[in-house]
Amino acid sequence: MSMKTWTAVDNYIVSSLLEADPVLDAVLAANRDRGLPAIDVSPAQGKLLFLLARIQGAKKVLEIGTLGGYSTIWMARGLTADGKVATLELDPHHAKVAASNFKRAGVSDKVELRVGPALQSLAALESEGAGPFDLIFIDADKPNNPNYLAWAMKLSRSGTVIVCDNVIRDGAVINEDGRDANVEGARAAFSFIGGDNRLDGTAIQTVGAKGYDGFAIAIVD
Image 1 (cartoon, rainbow, N blue to C red):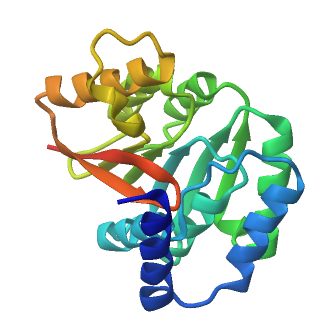
Image 2: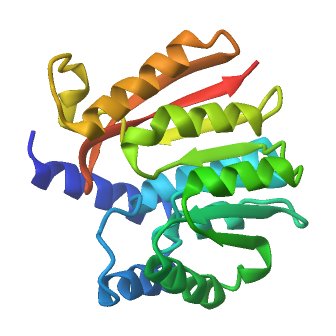
């Protein structure tokens, strides 16, 4: 199997199961034109986040790592009528692009964008009593995965679904002797989820237009 095949199958999935969406296409184009890294979730993965929000009947969603807001828009579309996504972004430029994309997609009223170090924003959310959240999506700097998961637990309830992206790292996650900080962060996510008896989780390996990676998913007991 090859990257070419994975991408072709991803394209087949999208053409078979997702409706054409010029707005989301424009969001990805805006991200590219504004110089953001091409590390958004794929369309099929975005649809998964949308479905998870709908399955949860999510009213409150927390996203750690906004980038240009592509995944945020998917989740915002899956919320209840009175739902909201709180999304956290470190980079002011990324946040500015995301805010424009939210307006383009017509979801600005469903998104609260906080700019600054995520750990500070998470502490602020707790102090404000913003939780508990129904769905939490972690897709930020990987070395902080255990810190983000610890905050996710503080901001969750029984039944909260937590998704942590990019935990397979082209298979490098099994390399115990590696010194790559992102791989160590992926391994730390596995250790956290596997070691906390309040969490019941698994991980899914994925291949597609974004290469070989995967995500961990857990529910809070």
